[in-house]
Length: 556
Ligand SMILES: [Zn+2]
Ligand SMILES: [Zn+2]
Image (cartoon, rainbow, N blue to C red; front, side, top):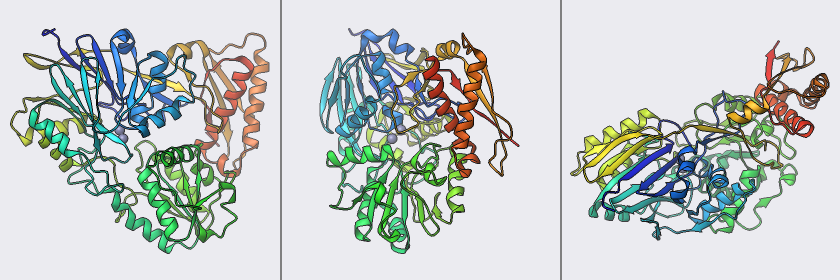
């Protein structure tokens, strides 16, 4: 027993944005912290989600004791359904986190009933040789926790995502005392959130958003449309409170926005004033100055509710001259094009679109800046330090920060990348080799309101099902299709009648374009996504195959 080593293995989220997952191994027992996904980069056309490669975990399946979740953001829980379809172990998390996991699991058909174990902050659970305490932290999502994992070799603190908000809107403070208690007793290793390691000072409190929002409610004479992440319960609460104060009723639009507000309300985390909600279909019937709309789609995702509103193709809502549209979220790098295109559409119809950084802010980060990172380092005073969550430059900045603090006891910090193994034994800590890591792309196909079965698309599927490229020449100005669509395929052989397949596919594409309005047709992001969805539905129905479909638009 005393020869056992402790290994900490980040399987995702280090040197990349999203897909957070860490394995902690003592002897033959493995505990997994978080199980997140990553949104695909635009280059990964035709792919909906990206998950961490589970090869290492599948090889060690018999040793895995549990997954422990820090909070409900997609980059921490998004891969849980996929993980559970491969490896059946209990999953620990707070009520809200697990409610979001359950929502994701509804899209999956698991062979076995998932074992979800609800925990609360301050609770301690035994999992194999590990004792895990859940410590409340402040973040942009409610019910977020850090973990204190006591192992036979010493204590590991994993912060999850955090900021140190001294005035959280729900008055649930960061439990710094418990963190400090562990620090006093001695911490072997700290893993801490590095997302904002290049931001000096302190991140503003969530409360800082109120003045700007209040000003918007105070001066707007027409409809107010607010878009934020559906998991930003604090932000949603603020909009509901202001709507009540200023005599507006609120329509909640978008599948994720509706379901997450329902979950938060049912758990007592969101206070919905009586009679304030408005059915989406009634939103356009009230005088505009009596309406506020909460809508999902801050990142310009082509099929999101806000994108549809922007191209005037939403069944219930439209944006008119004089309306105010508020994007209360960060622009995630890589999404700029889609977001700005969406803003252009709405500006063109005369809406005042507010976005980006301004003072007072429309949005504040959920991650702590440098001073908050220092505070946590100073309280925990670990012997070893491993920065997590961030690109390499942020991880190395965070490591340097720890070294500069020179608190007594820090022996070493380790800037690691996903797949690196940190090994700790009685002689000390060191990087010791690598395990296989990588990305697996998932094609969910659920771009409509209808949820479809998730399909795992890995390289094997790609080689079996091939690629289909619909090529369409569209006139940028008129939105007219200049030639009949071409269909090119590779590795996608249709046994009986190839030309019949091509003819039918052409028809599907032509119909999609015909049924789109002018603005959709001139928005490549939207039209590509529509073509992909329609063609996929057709091909699956006709052939039961799932080729990768990558529409190509030639601008003429
Ligand atoms: Zn988070
Ligand atoms: Zn995160």
